[in-house]
Length: 317
Image 1 (cartoon, rainbow, N blue to C red):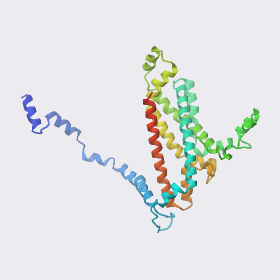
Image 2: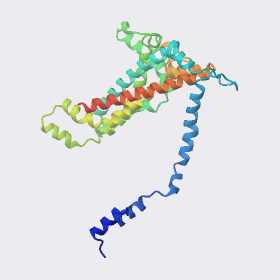
Image 3: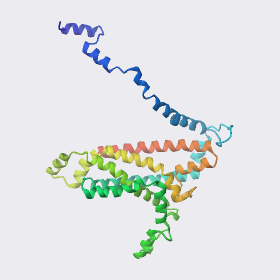
């Protein structure tokens, strides 16, 4: 017998779900055994990430040296010292922000420019993309030693080329100049990873429908207007990935800094990750844990600000 509308309304009023809905609800109900599948990942996350992070907070309020069984609780004095009386940490943070600004801006612009020029899948574009991607397969230590030779003030290739073309006035000691050394390291980072991020932009550009460009061309839009109003808003996901990856990469340029600046690096090349490493090697584990927590807070703040800036830029066009 066909279910009448009145019967269906009565059952709904009585709290009974319709037959079809009950079947769909039963089908959508998760089998309890499925909750076991993410369990290994949760265990690994708890053991190797959550646990050490909680321990870092615990040790950050102690004077633990990393070896002794006993240590003293020093409260918030480690954080107070970092904020008010640690010129080394402040210098490293300043260097890191300079490094970050140069790398994020230069690497994003250069990789986007390369992607726009090489987005078509022609033979020449594919070959050039492979060449630009090549530095990304090298280890950071290898890149550091290659560029250490390039920056050598006496025998380096850059100074020799400048001298060969009569531009002796532009010769520099590069890493030996305390005021500009961090920028030369940033240039090395851009050279090593611009091709890698170009691939992300190429993937984003190739997802944009060609019809949008044809419509813009029919409306008389110039090349710049097509980029500003079609390309830029539609590569927002790729841009967000590139900026976030570059930001984290800038804070983790540990091996590149040690390769170019030695261990420990001098003050003009010291960044937050190398400063924390130096503090650990000096057997000040409690203080290094406090520096690590401040480091995490800075990364979270910078990532949040960059995400909002990218979103505002691409929604405001």
